[in-house]
Image (cartoon, rainbow, N blue to C red):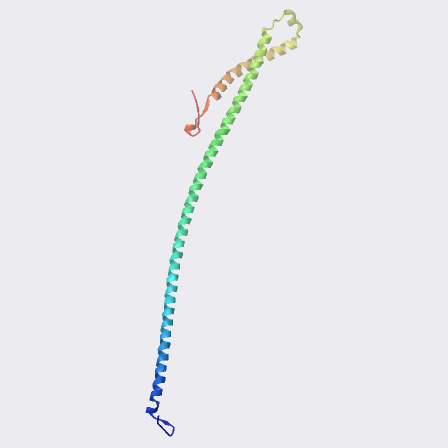
Length: 192
């Protein structure tokens, strides 16, 4: 290379300058390629993130729709169960009322039978007393006050027996014929 007094001539720097230019050019190309690859990676990552975000949105939207459907179904099932429960409560209430009515009628029947039995026993005692042979002497032996009392008791007992027999027969016949019909939903009917 030629040099004259510290001055570089173009021919002296040309080969060295070509090397530097090539290095600068190669470095620029490398950096350009790095920037392009980095931009592509960032773009791909951004696209992937957007796709993931869109998928996430779709998944969340599908979850919301599913949850809303489940909520509506649960609400409908709850209403159906409440209606069914109310119907069962009504049936139990009606059944309980029928049982109460049957128990009341049974108690009335038992009471009527006891009353009839007691009256029949009183009637039997009276009949036995009336059949007993009465002597004239035994009648005079009874004091008049005791005789009046016995007549009143006898008259009252006879009246009570007649009343009880007629009322007892009606009550026993009526209550005794009460039937429970399962085919009509538990409504009771009187047979004739």
